[in-house]
Every structure is written in C-alpha cells, then in structure tokens.
Length: 92
Image (tube, rainbow, N blue to C red; front, side, top):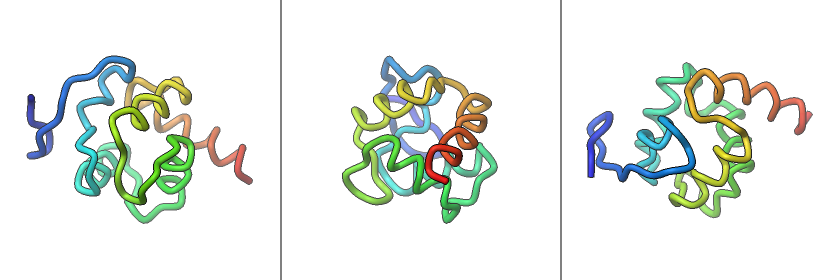
C-alpha cells in the first residue's frame, strides 16, 4: 500500500495514474478535485460519480473507480479534465 495526499491507497490496474487518487473516501475525492482544479461541490463531480455508477455519495469502490475511468477513457488528469466537458454534454 502506498500513500498519496496523506491517504493510503492500493495500486490497481485499469485506470493508469488516476488510481493513485483512489481512497474510497470523501477525502480522496477532495484531493482529486484539488488536482483537477474543480471544487468538490461542483456539479461535474456529481456527474462523475453518476458516470462511475457510485452506489454511495462521496465514496467510490475500487471497481466503480476503475470501471468509470475506463468508460471515460481517462487515465491521466488531463484526460479526466477533458472528459468533464463530454459528461456535461451528455447530461445537458
């Protein structure tokens, strides 16, 4: 187990470098938001959780995290930032 942003996480396959933000907790989501320059209260984070099929607000299972990032074809911060626009277009 490694530590990123002060939170332990497991290295996992299927989501590239973005697995380093996985903590399964709201603190991990906040850390990710900080790095992608999106406020954790931004509607795009709610849409991201929807796209990942999150069963619980503010929390992601490792399977939800990987499945969502694979579906979004996002394995880097830059790609995830670009996918926010795609998600917005689908919803709006």
